[in-house]
Image (cartoon, rainbow, N blue to C red; front, side, top):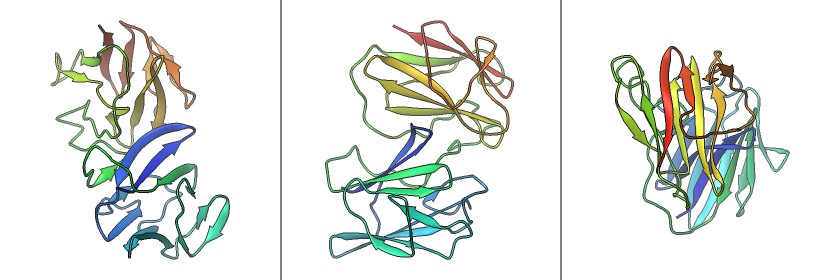
Length: 215
């Protein structure tokens, strides 16, 4: 099944399978693919499936939509085409076996941040490596553990501080992906450049303290 792989600064944020004839992309929360960034229009673009082909159409967005560096209005997508919207890159992959539908994809946390500070909108397929998890240390969810079983797990509070933990062949890395407040790793601010995680590392996002644990 064809899918779109969303990334920023080289860090994969989300993998979205194209299960519908029409998939919308934009900043507003009712879109199928939500990118909560001011460079993205409320209703930015639409991805349409027709006769086995996939088209991307810009919906008169403010900052435009680019495919492989070229501004487009409507274009047929080819395998591995890269759609560029602001700092975000969305790579198109043609039909292949996936892990199942991923509806309502969002860079933001998929559930209420107040009740679930470590909510996990994740996508992708696991790779080889040791089992790992994030353990919440304080707040209403203290003691909760979130298993890192997918390629990408996002944690934090949308609009405030969001980090992405990415599983790589050599281990796990963390990077700041959204929000005005930089998450902290062992007391130091996390930037967009991925940082390797090791067992026992302490993460702090918007006042929520967490620990990376790996078997």
